[in-house]
Length: 215
Image 1 (cartoon, rainbow, N blue to C red):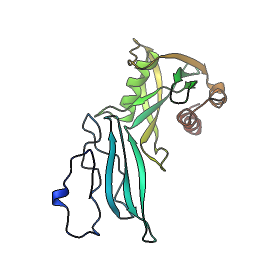
Image 2: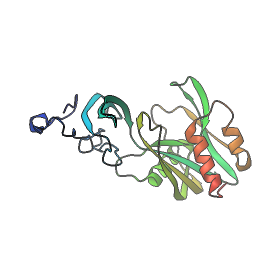
Image 3: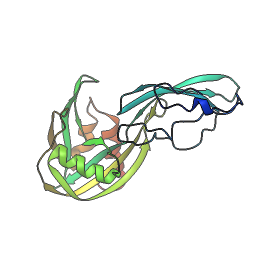
Image 4: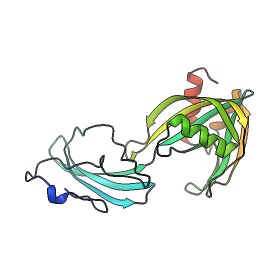
């Protein structure tokens, strides 16, 4: 059992070499003390867990897993804090934010979104992020869906939140947020969001809201 760059209990490892390795659910994954996001017990034996990067907001590593045919393989993963994505509607218009994304080197029109802070629910984080990014605070919020994202490589959950009853408040952007609020008519929102460049969170949020009859 190996866990690099993390607290290790190697001295307490069992004598049985075929015993499954301890996973990371009991180790703090982020600077605020939250644990890793693992949905359940592994169906395939985990022989080794290695953390290679731990930047506080981002953790990366791999599990060495015994596959059904008896072979072993390193399954690499990156874990991010849970995120909230907000579909906010006021006066038959949907709120977006326009911002440049250095990672993909283009400017996108997106739904407001952000990290769920320690102790927050998706809806609480959604209300806070909406106010910080657009200057509007909702009187009501509801969770449309929680999903796991890019499960081939990510350990990351996302909650889609519908917000309404918007009232103006002071904008409070983070130091790395250089964005501009925009609004589009409800009937045009999905078409506008499909115009490249776009992203999965924006399309998924709008499709969920439309499916629920909210758009």
